[in-house]
Amino acid sequence: MAGSVKYRVVIRAKAEADMLAAARWYEEQSPGLGTEFLRATEICIASVSRNPSMYAAMYRNIRRALFRRFPYGLFFLLLDDTLIVVACLHGRQSLAKLRHRK
Image (cartoon, rainbow, N blue to C red):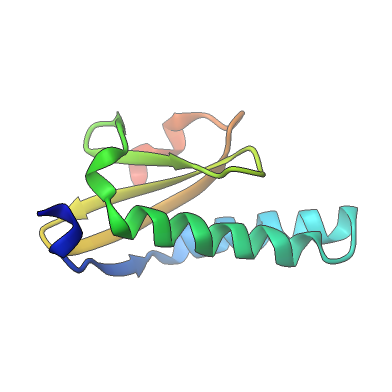
């Protein structure tokens, strides 16, 4: 059943800002690494959109999917047929940032 559902993906502005800030930081560390981070973000979003219910809720009904290569998590809400990305946070950042992202 979950495989037959198509989810519309919405990336909130703050989540996009999180992703771009991380990509800029990685790019400063090593040219090309920022692009790799953005590609990892796309892969994570694609994985989540295939089966969002497999990811555990971390804060209220906000779920988290971990990146494979980078120490980041993609935080999202699932509302009917829409997957809403609310944050992209480093593993050491506090989940308290999610309080105002719903």
